Amino acid sequence: MTEPCDVLVIGAGPAGLAAARAAASHGVNVVLVDLQANPGGQIWRHDVRKSAPAAARLAVAEMRARSNLHWLPQAQVVATAPGRVLIEEAGLVREIEYGALVLATGARELLLPFPGWTLPGVSGAGALQALTKQGWPIAGKRVLLAGSGPLLLASAATLRRHGAQVLAICEQAPDAALMAFASQLWRWPGKLLQAAALRTRLAGVAYRRASWVRAAHGDERVREVEIESARGIERIACDQVAVGYGLVPNTELAAQLGCALELDGRHPRVRVDERLMTSVDGVYAAGEACGIGGVDVARVEGAMAGHAAAGADDAARALRPRRRHARAFADLLPRYFDLRDDVRKLAEPTTLVCRCEDVALAQLQGYSDARAAKLATRCGMGSCQGRICGTALTELGLLVPATRAHAARPPVFPTRLASLAAAGSYLDRSCSERTFLTESKGSV
Image (cartoon, rainbow, N blue to C red; front, top):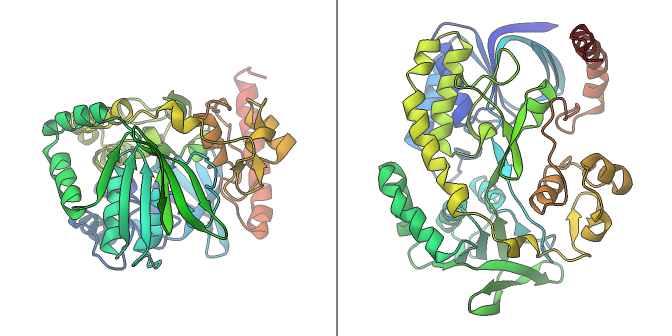
């Protein structure tokens, strides 16, 4: 059975919540879909020990108050077709037909391989923060964080609040870059206050500039981490290592829908115009999917996309100055937290790059195409579907990122066999329509 709606929003983080609320304010019928049980995304993820920020509570309250906004938790998109998506929810498959679509699919961590990164006790900085918020026991553990960017400070503050002993934060960016970044913050008073608050919560925690993790050591789990800095190489005993080198946009769903992508540094993002419409008519994108920007960018772009998707172009246009101001801050991040080549050269020939299928770096040398690497080595065929290893190889300069439309094939995420069976006829129909459209344009 096909269920219609005027505006479908995929992703219930700050961008998706803002988009759904803005669209619903114009009286149209809105459906908001997210894989998680609670709205808020990664940045506003439910914390068992702390209430959500006021902005998050307000956004969720307004979402629930709208009778024309239907919230679908624990639901994920399995496949797409023009004007429709196939969704798996609570073991059931449902098709939703939309008039306009807003992609608020967020971002994921950039993780780079190094010797020992597969040991138990080594994780992503954002991943450990998410686990801790959900109640994973961290109290009393000695944790070292390393990588680059503001996420390290936010993760460290969460871990400390839950009782972890944060040994140090190792930031790979040099001191001059960090000072230059800090000198720009007066233009965004909210960011300046946020940074000061984080440093206060982390009083006494060493913040080591121009230092990075070389290797993790241990037997059944990590016991020591090896740090390199201007002072040389040193070993630090620890129970947990959390490493993250920033974020990269989630673009798989946009690519499957045929939206054009463009490179933002080494990784693709969704290309949008001033209205935040993608290259596909009626499909909008907002927030991290359009380039890493943080919560302020996500909220204003979500609102713009929601207004535009509901046909309220004047309301969307009025937010453009706020968007430019927020994006200006986002543009600082790659400039001052640019990764040094040292962290791209840490993996050794025997270091596993594809953790799902146990594929080492040496097995992947010589491939620049993800599909060829997959066919020859099974790299990217595990549960992450190449999101971790493929992104890492792109950052290392070994794979060329896919930016062409329809580069991502269904299913978008690993799914149940029954859902695939249900999707079969849907996908056949989708492919037939896509072929018809292509042939009609004389491209085949």
